Length: 158
Image 1 (cartoon, helix red, strand yellow):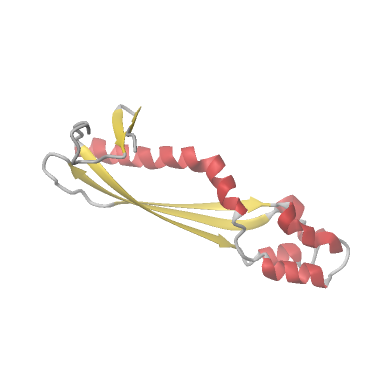
Image 2 (cartoon, rainbow, N blue to C red; image 1 turned 180 degrees about the vertical axis):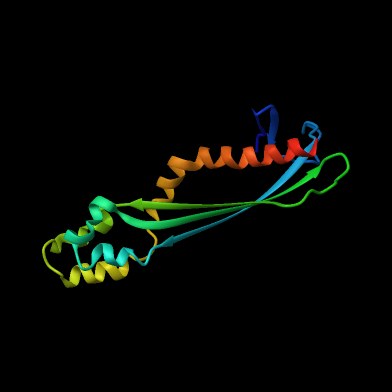
C-alpha cells in the first residue's frame, strides 16, 4: 500500500504509518485510531407511518435515524514512546431521510390501513442506505473535526 502525505493546520500527516520500513519518513508522533460506529432507527418512525400519511407525512419529514461515531485515539511520541491520555471523540448525528423504498407504504394515504401498520413496525429499524448518504455528506467534515481535535492535542503538548 502506498503511503499518503497531507498537510493541514501546519502539521504533516503520513498515512498509513509503518515504523519498521526504511522508506518511512521520521515523524514526531504516532496516533493509533480506533473507530466504532453505531446506526439506529427511531421508535418514532412507527408514528411516521401509522396512523398515516396526513398526520406525519413521511415523504415530507422523513424517517429519523441516529448515527454515532466514537473515535478513540492513542497518541505516543515516536522518539521516546511516551503515551498521552487517550483522546475520545464521540459524535452523534440525528438524520432525517425519506426514500421510496420506505415511503411506499403510504399508498393507504387517507386511511388507517394494515399496510401503514406493518410498514410502521418494519421501518422502526435503521435503513442501511442512509449510511452512504451520511458519509457522502459528512465524511470530510468529520475527518476535519477529528483532525482539529488531534491537532489541538499535539499543539498543547509542545
